[in-house]
Length: 117
Image (tube, rainbow, N blue to C red; front, side, top):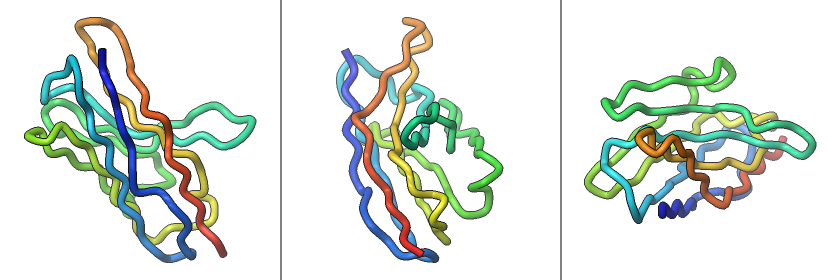
């Protein structure tokens, strides 16, 4: 099994910053692909940022230049640094981890980010 624990969400004013963390434990390798999705009420989850086993990153167009995803393999943790936040970034952010060999994706419990105008 795989467990993902997110932290770092909260309320921030527009233009501010937040840093989300996602710590993985259980049956994992340090090089599992990981990333973050965003989901608002009534909508499907949308990819925000992803980081591959080799450190290659991918971002949604809406966050390019403002968000940075990174990972600390020694701590099995992925981070999402969010700068210049906008009200439209308000969302529940979910961390994921892929066990490609098991063909499974694991999700964290989600952390709420609210950006006030």
